[in-house]
Length: 205
Image (cartoon, rainbow, N blue to C red; front, side, top):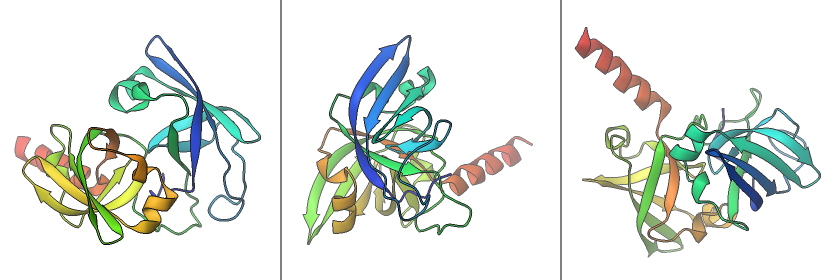
């Protein structure tokens, strides 16, 4: 479980695609203070890479490796990665830590396409097109995670939704580098998913 509050950013330094899977190596430096309390990752630990929950398979000082299964590659933007790409990183939350964002599982629902970016003061407003079938789970003032970043939906329309990126988010994440036409990992609200599932089960029964 994650919060959507990005701890640090890393850089993709190696990527090997084989039989639908992706072996990824990322260089990074986690802060020693804060949530997990240490600056390195351990083998077997969960880490969200652009919002995708992955397991650390190897780790060293300033780097770690992970393996994305074929289903993960198909559903996320990992298959589109290129070397030197910056990525958002977050370690799994601690039960004793603060939940400053919202509940993020790291289970990506699909890829949202960035349609436009406009300035509003020092912030930026991004308009995105959600994947088919996800629109009912996206509501105004509700939470959404984009590339692992916890954001609040500011507006919703037919086939689109908007989020606002404040200066801190632009500085602390990779969102400032995204351009119209880019695809981003999207994870919708966990509660909304269960509500839809429950209503669907009731209608069938």
